[in-house]
Each structure stands twice: as C-alpha cells, then as structure tokens.
Length: 337
Image (cartoon, rainbow, N blue to C red; front, side, top):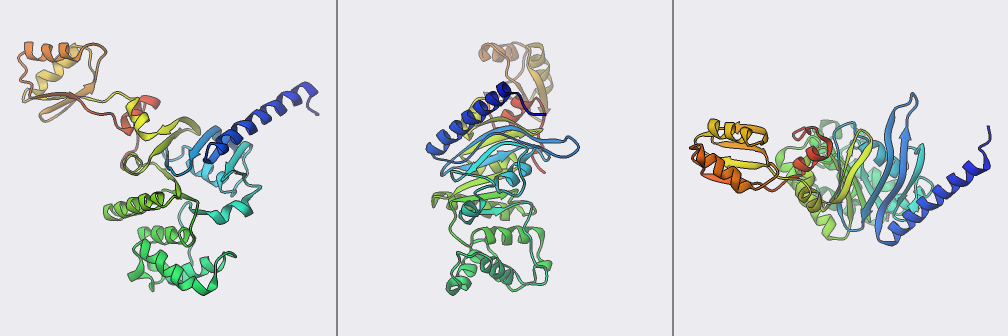
C-alpha cells in the first residue's frame, strides 16, 4: 500500500533533519556519525536500536558494552559489511555503505578476529593482504610488512605457519594487517581478545602511539579497565541501545564513588552504616564500603565514632567507569571477561 502523502512528508522531514545533524557533526570534525541507525534481523531480533553516535577526530573512542549489546553489529554496519534496516551512518564524512570504495582504503579494521590462511606464514599472510590493496606500492611491500610485524611484536614469529599461532598471536597479526598503510581511522573489535596481560599492555601502548600520530581509534570492548586506561571518549551500549556517550572523565565524574571506611571493627562499622542508611554495604577484612548516602558525610563519621568504631580511614573513592555503568543500567558488568 502506498504511503499517504502526509506521512511521506513527515518521513522526508525526519530524513532531512537527520541528514542536517550528520552534516553538522561531520563539519565539527566527527570521523563517525550515525543517526537513528537500526538493525533488525529476520525473525524480529532488534540488534541495534536507533543509534546516534558521534566520534570526534583524533579521539581514542571506547565502544563499551556487554557481549550481545550490539557493538559488533554496529561496527559491521559502519564498515559496510551489512546494510542497516533504517537510519544513516557516515564514516570520514561519507555515507556507508554507499561510499565504501572511497572510504575503506583510509580505514584499518580488525573485526571478529582476522581471516588468515593457516598454511601460510604470518609474513606471507601480510604480503597477501598488502598485494590485495590496489593503492599499495609493490616495490616497498616487504619493508611495509616488516615494519607492521615489528610494530605488533611478531618479527620473531613471522616465519611460523599461522595455524600454529595462538589466539593472541592471531590478534596481533590481524592488527598488523590493519596497520600496513597509514590510516585516518582504525576500527578494533575486542583487540586484546586472547592476549596475556603483557600483550594487553603492549596493544594499549600501540593504540596510544597511533592516536598521538593523528589516527582516530574506535575500540570496541567489554573490558571496563581496558577502556578506562586507554580511551579519551566512550559510548556505553546495552541491549542494542546507546545509554550515554562523551569524554571518559565526564562519564566517571557523573557517577558517585564508593564510601570506604578502614577500621579493625569492620562488623560494627557495617552495622552502623546500614543503620545510617548506607546501601550496598560490603565487608572485606578491615575495609567496609557502601553507597554514600545523601547528606553530610561528617555526620556519618560521627555516628561511627559514637558507636565506638575505631575509624582509621574515611573517604569517598573516585568513581570509576564500572560505577558509572552500574549507575546507568542498574546492573553489574562482566569486568574480567
């Protein structure tokens, strides 16, 4: 059935407004800008629901959310790998997926793990990747591959077959493939997956170096600590919807920190804190923590002292991204894995 003319006009007006918003973001230096971006799969599953995302140029932008929150689906739409059901996505100022051929040579990406030829060595895999790039100069190919291997710490394993690589080594090789050419934008989906703590630190250092060179890094992760250590900006997703976005420091500052009382009388302290209206009281040896109540904290300290609790420390710790996430969603977060 044909849409009534009034409804058509309303839709056209909404589309024009969205286009104007995206144009304004791009003009302000946004490397990625989406408006009402939505993906609904067959069967009715709504994976991404009306996403309005703005990624500033030069930022290390953390795309944060639990597994299944819609992060990878969003990235696949941004890279033109799947079509959105509705809404718009602009990358480097161009509409995706329509402008993919012009945009993607300027974007390095590691999405859902690298696709590798197991029977080829790490170096030969990168040589194949580079040869598939029509803009790559074949005369400098080996030097380019060698530099990329060195940058991710795989020079010593470059001759080993890719099928013998650990998961962490495969992640490094995929990152090396994304770094074969200078990129305006680097899109990384769970880049530290499978890495040991030392490897995670090395990838974080590499991301900071790339950002200092002027590359915008869009980093998807479900690890709060990883995002907090390396990112300048963050967006939080849950169940396909955007909860918030902005500078990391502002997001953490918007959440209340935890009250921490250090005392040898932890059980008595916990009892008094509960009586004074402190929620979520947790005991851990000589520390008692809880949600700071409204009102004067000095009164709370006085109540502890009046009850005979020996208070050795009394403070409100700075809020973390985990605190902000819990405040936004009312639920916990898979911090470790």
